[in-house]
Structure formats: structure tokens, C-alpha cells
Length: 313
Length: 313
Image 1 (cartoon, one colour):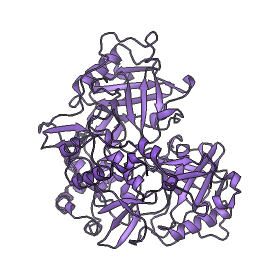
Image 2 (tube, chains in turn orange, purple):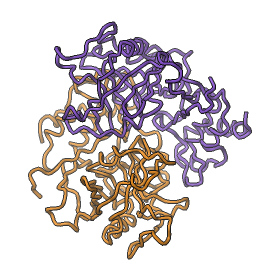
Image 3 (tube, chains in turn blue, brown):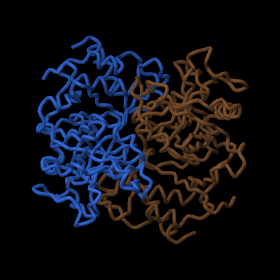
Image 4 (cartoon, helix red, strand yellow):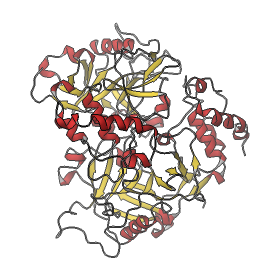
């Protein structure tokens, strides 16, 4: 491993222990250590992984692609159903029908409320039992953040996904943050299933946690959703049909030939390199920073993604 | 006061005391109590205030207006300087030059780096001493949130502005969250002054707190900034001059005739009604919610704004 990362070992440990102390202690923390750019430059091939094409969903718009990594460890039935919907081409020709500022973008059948016009589902399910949380499995990857959370007892990352855990209830769950993808539902808990999807485009709406099934995360092309014109109808729905943004096609990556896949690599989050990255964000060493926070909130942890420029598998 | 609000008094107090207990305690909290819609419907004229036109800055684009409330209690020199800049029409013809996804929009002189082309400042200041934090003044309004914060000892609202306090250091400061406006700077702490402004358009980048002078908050027209095309240059700068979004004019509201002002009312945050509103967001009583968070993070507290439809002063 690169010496830049190695030399951070002891300082990193010290910073973790000091994290219970707020404010002035953090301000006096040493500046020595890598920036995120250093961590990325020093990263090794093993610090990155390719997306599993069976757990990767593409949303293709006329001007480009959004790539979603599906969270099969957390919402297995919803993930299977979203893939089944994509495989019967259910999403093709549906549209972004809602863009609410600092909240969500929503993809749906614009005619969902009209029985005679609504798109029919062939083999997939219209609705599913809720997967709001799951049993806490200590074998699932979990890189715990050291600085706590306003909403949950423990938060951290499970291979890129933001996760909360509660040992008392014995549960863990995906948490709402920028780019997270969920299955819209009506008032009944089991009224969602993935036929309508939403993506968080603003400050993490954590009040939604454990209220709706999160099933994935946008890892590429987020700006195709976040920069869309906001809807002026109630809750950000587009008033007029022509404002909607059509989905050209949606496919599971595994179903496309390799030449049509987006060859992404995502940084692993259970590695020493990623622990260094977290630390580089808790205490920013770039010259610009006058004060180091000494802390980090789950919504501010970046998970780097890169196009695999070498084209190597 | 409306009975809906009155009957919430005791339940609210209980919820505050219970706030140290996470998770299951919150889930079993009663559903009884008003929703935010109830709180707004029951609000009285005294629960609202009009913006002070001397502390209100307009950014007028060809397609509409962005309204910024200036935080003269927290950055008095920067606020005075931004007003001086607006009054000498410094911002007119400048542009949005940077839109970085999930981070900031930045307004600047595109020719700032070219001495012969850069816009000259007449009477205002180019740079000012930093106003990253200020002495904690217990006389300033402060509605403390009950659920803590990852970054600061205390957080709350000071008449609409998100604020952190630290009794140990004796300081208080504005915190970065959606819509907050700051003065861009170079590496030196005193290299900003308001000639370049940025606005947060993503998840609260709290690592910037106490590193840069925040001076206001967008209270209207946020979607004119947040939905702009993201820049594809480094740090989200627009690559090409024609991508920039020109500022037509920027004025202090007090300098415009009343007929040209945007007549906004903003909800007061130091009132019993606003405490009810916070509680309605900590524990969502809408039928859709299956689980109530029982907690709220500073970035998720809405501060309602409305157009004063009656036109009454």
C-alpha cells in the first residue's frame, strides 16, 4: 500500500478516539494526512469494484443515461421486481412526472390513475410487502461512521449504500440521502412495488427512513435528474403532459451487450483506503480550510465512482 | 390562538423531554397533534413577518427573481458591503459561472482574473475581514432544536436562519444548509467580501461551517438556481461563456418602489406556532407515515414563506 496511506494509520486511530469531543479539540487536530485527492491517487485496483451487471439498472433518456446500483441485500423482493419490470419493458415510455425542489424526482406511468390507459404489468408484481428495514446481519458489510447521527443509533456504509443500524431492535435499513432510489407507495405500507420510483435530489429527507422501501442508489448521471425543471403543480408534479421527461428505455445491465454497458468502477467502502477517505473528509487538509470539522454526517460521505478508462474487467 | 395549537402544548413538552431516547420510544409516540398544514392553517398574522427591505437583496434574471434575506446579525460587514455593491450596480451583468451538483451555485465576474477586463469596484470593498462566527449573544433569537447535531453542540433557528452555538467557545455561527448564501473566498480567510457569492443547492455541506462567511438565505426563487444545468468543467464551472446565466440586475429591496418589490411574508421562528411546526416535522402525523422519526435535523426544518396575497403591510 502507498506510504501516504500507511503513515495515516496512527493519526487516524487517534482521531477516532477523539471524536467524542466536539469543537475546539477538532480544531486543534493535526493537518497532516492525505486529502481525498491523495487517497484516490494512492488507491490500488483492489480498492475499486465493478458494478454487478445483475444489480445494475439503466434509465436511458434521449440525452443520456442514469445508472442505479440495486440494493439486493436490503430490498431483495423489490430489486427482483424492478428487474422483472425492466425485463418486460414496463418502464419504456414512462416518464419523470414530478420534480419537487430539494426533495425528489419521481418516475411513473402518467396514466396510472386511468384504468383503461394505464400500462399493464405482465409477469412482475404491481405491489409487494414492504421492505422498509431488515434483520441486522453482522455479516453484511458495514463501515461505521464515528460521529453519530441525529436519527439513528448507528450509521455507516454497506458497500456504498448509506445504512442505519439499531442493535436494540435488531434491525438495519437504508437511509434517505442524495441519489437514493425508492419505491413510491400510497398510504398502505404494502402499496409500493417499484412500478413508481423516486430519487432524492435534495437534503437527505431522513423522516422518510423506514417509511418506504429504498432499493438502490444513483451512481452515475445524477445531474440528469437533479437539474430538471421543477414542477409547478402540487408536490412538484408537472402541470402539463409536454413537461414530462420520457424514459426511452430501462434495462438491467446484464441484458445488454458489454459494448452498451457503462463501465463504472465504484470505490469499495470496507477498505483501509476508504477509512482514509472518510478521515480526509472529517478533517479537510486542503489549504483552503481554516477549521476542520473533525466530524462527518452520513449525507456528506462521498463514494467515488469512475469510468473504467482502461476497459479492463 | 387556535385550539388545534393550544392542545398541543403538553404533548410537545413531553416530546422534548423524551428526545434523548432514540428509536423505539419515538415510534410509540402518539399520532395526535397537528400536521404542518394544520399549523399553517391555524397561524395568526402575528406568526408571520414581512422581510425588512433594507435586509433584502434581489437577484433579477431574465426569467424571474431570487430573493435573499440578509443576515445582518451574523455578518454585518459583509451584508453592508453586499448592499454597497448592489447599490453601485456591481452585480448587474455578472453571471452564474458555476453550478456543481449537490453543492453550490456561484455568482461572479467572469473576467475577475483578467485585470484589464475585471469589473471595478467603486465605493464598496473588494475584501473584508472574515465573519465566520460571532460572539454568542443570548439576546439574539434562538429556537433550539431538541435532537442534537453531528457537527455542533447546539443548533436552532434565529428568525429563519440556521444557527449553531457553542457555549464553551462563546461563539455562534450560521450553518450551511440548502439555500444559504455565502461570500466566496480564496485561501486567505480575509479574501472574501461578497463580490462573489455562492448558494448551497445540495445536501448541507457542513464541513464549510466557520470556514467561510455566510451572509444570507434564499427565501424565494430557489428553483431558479437549483435547477440550472450543471457545469461540466472542474468544480462545476461552465466551460463556455454562453452557458453562463447573466444577472440582469441586483438591488436592495428598499431601493425599489413598493410596486416592484416581492411582497413576501416569512413565518416567525421564535413563536409557539413555530415550535408546533417543528414538532409536526419531528413526528409526522400525515396518514402516509408508518413510523415517526421523533427527531429532526437542522437541514430538515422548513421555514414557510408566502406571498402576501392581501397586499397588507
